[in-house]
Image 1 (cartoon, rainbow, N blue to C red):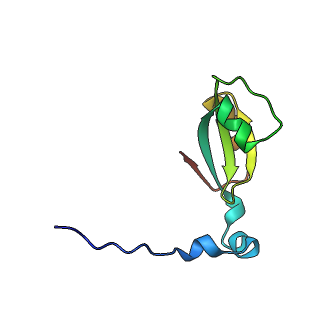
Image 2: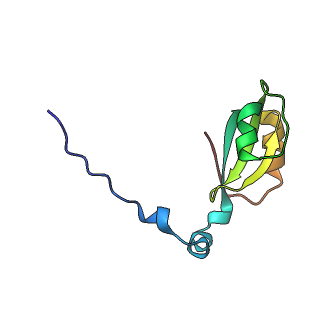
Image 3: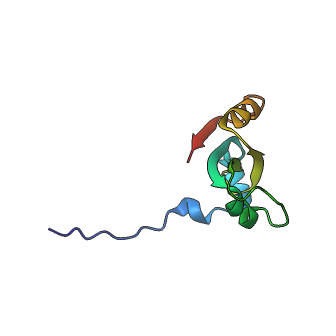
Length: 89
């Protein structure tokens, strides 16, 4: 049996920067593991070892905040930050 699934446009995708901040957008970050060659597309003009793993901390609005060479480095940096929610992707 096939399900009929409609794609629902989530209203959170259409928030202005001001509306997002009012919801606490500045308190949410996520951590994403990337290879050095992938970081070049995120941070043009920077050079990283292409085959090394890095951990990129990004704000909920998509702004890069910190790059670490280990999960421990990221965890240490996050301890001193005012973020209420941190997720790992």
